[in-house]
Amino acid sequence: MTIIQRFTIQFLLLFSLNLISFGEDGGIHADVIVYGDASGGVTAAVQTARMGKSVILVSQYGHLGGLTSSGLGWTDIGNDAILGGLSREFYHELYKHYQKPEAWTHEDREKFPNKGQGGPALNDKKKLASTFEPKVAQAVFDKMIRDAKVKVIKGRLDLKKGVIKEGKRITAIRLEDGRVLHGKMFIDASYEGDLLPGAGVSFVVGREANTKFNEKGNGITGPLHGNQLRKGIDPYIKKGDSNSGLLPGVNPDMGGKVGDGDHRLQAYCYRMVLTDVPENRLPITKPKNYNEADYEIMFRLIEVGFKGAFFKKTLVPNRKTDGNNVGGFSCDFIGGNYGDDWNWATLNHDEREKLAAKHRDYQLGMVWTLQHHPRVPADIRRRTIDWGLAKDEFTDNGNWPYNLYVREARRMRSDFVMTENHCRHTLPVDDPVGMGAYTLDSHNVQRYVQDEMVRNEGDIQSHLRGKAYGISYRAIIPKVEECENLFVPWALSATHIAFGSIRMEPVFMILGQSSATAACMAIDAKLPVQKVSYDKLRARLLADGQQFGVKK
Image (cartoon, rainbow, N blue to C red; front, side, top):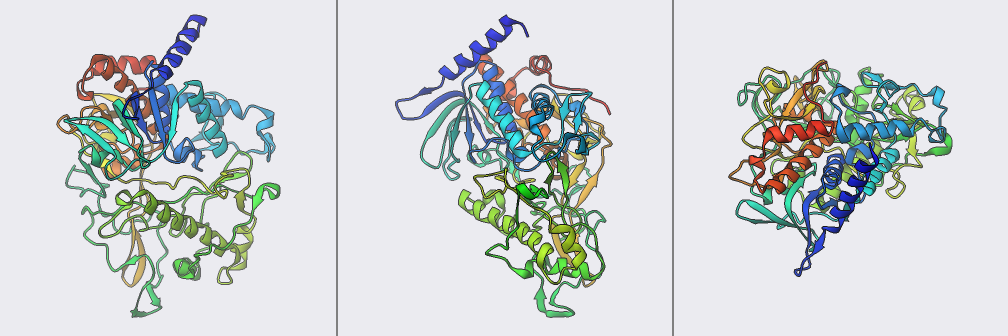
């Protein structure tokens, strides 16, 4: 970068910050309002500022990065060649951090196994880090926002009357505390797609039937082998007695035939950041709301001979874990994110906090049980007891991650729907604004009774072999008749199973940047988002380093 280029960028950033104004109505005005502090919200805000527009980033949690800085330190990507622009910049900054000797506070650099998904965790050839500590990820996001001089406002959307609209345009959003943020363009970077209902934008929740879009991996799956329970687990509170009732979280049947659609969501969990380094470890204590019945299936799984792991201990630097779900009984609180007439997205903020706390207590209770309960064999207790919470992570949140892993909630339904067939290249995508490459991935959705046994249902892990696919511009914008100034880079228009691949954090960063680029171009051309020239958009994205046409 030349001195002139650097000066120009710095001038634009300062200019964009000064463009934020305060109206007579007490509202705050900016060109672009980004709602959501997750990774894609950060890249959207930074790109907007770099393009010389004023921007406000609304942070619901007060900590930037979403899942990427809340424990998902073992990056799900499939093919790192899809990284470009700000996404690549982020993972490169992480790489640079771990080249410093002082970064290795609880582990010798030489002893780090350096294993990531499909390649080295710290890739010296590509100068990328695909595994990292949460606090380091947050520091990188904070610096990106600080360097871009993005204004960050902490607050949460008023979920009842938070979207103010005139005709087909959103004019402002209202936060819970009454603050009003006015903008020309809006980017919904929330995991829930919270702007969609108020904006009058169509969306769906749950699984489509396979027949709807000619797919094979959508809808009810039946008891597939992936992350399945062993056979022989009795489903009743009193073994063999159907009159005693079903164990917690077990349904009497699948609720339909294989391939049928339903309202259910794949399970959520926290990515547990644990360590076995004594000086940085806090013991897992028994939650106040501990309920032994929540682990009866785990006890019975052990009784039928299971001796494997109950949660992943995938290592990131400094002897910390990205502790994710593994196997038939693990971190996923299966069925804990929906009911017959509600789901995570329909809850208000306080209700979500309470439900998230149940997920936290379920996982902490599971680890405590594995470490201390007399029904757990001594060998399992021995190999679990050395793990505790990391003292130096999430220090203002009881050393527990800020974000629950909301793997899916609302999904917009626009004029273009990404399906399994687009991910498998059996249907074309003519207007890509980013790429994905990860496995078509759904965690289990429910537990039910089959042949007098407890079975898991909904798990799909259908590999794409690293072959990248394009994600359509039309999938991140609403129908023109519904809203003309909104972008949705995460809760985008896709089927349940296609979303299972697209939802990965690196792709969120990519689509966040692409959304912001298109938003700025729409402002300059005074056009609805549906009328932005794709050829001009593609040219700008390529100039900023975004990747298209990636092969395995």
